[in-house]
Image (cartoon, rainbow, N blue to C red; front, side, top):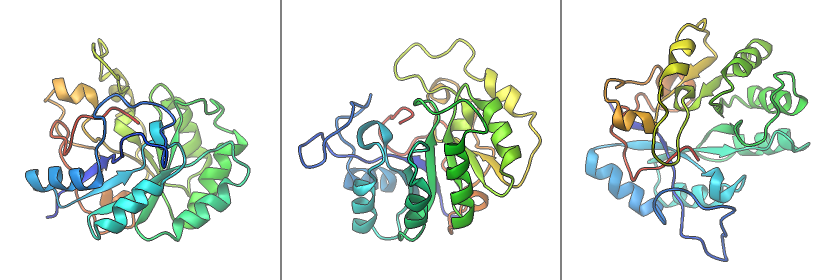
Length: 240
């Protein structure tokens, strides 16, 4: 069975040709070539490459460059802006891109807390029409996500990092898995999924060793498994 890392980020150093919007906690750069070397070193066959919002916001051009340079090694996820009136067109165009498997909403970055928000509805409806799941970075917003799932049963929602907070620096939360216990009691539906990609609490809590869902169910790709939590493929990276 191929081993697939559920989420990696690749990025260049900050430079005028592709300037960062903000600085990421972690390595100064993790290029596509460096990520491939890290994957090969631990026997990871492929990975879901998520364009890092912290530096590039909604510009996935570097992820596209990495995908083109390493055929067959990466699937692609692009953050989208729910406040953009043209977001449906953005999603439709993304669905046509070679390697694109999902879009992402950074719900911790100023997105409406209303499950009925028109912008969120546009994203979820457009993703369903295009056959793309929607990744949600949504710690502290799980109740809202449950309502969104009920409103949009045709859209596959993937809860990033099992809904756990991703601290950018020590100390970790006192109860890092408190939200996980509540999430575990949600009704299971075919369109509501979760994943773990070595969230920060896992690096100090090896008892949580497996994601609750596989990429084969969430994405229309040949990817059939994910790297175990606690064994990240590349350099440490926080939720970005």
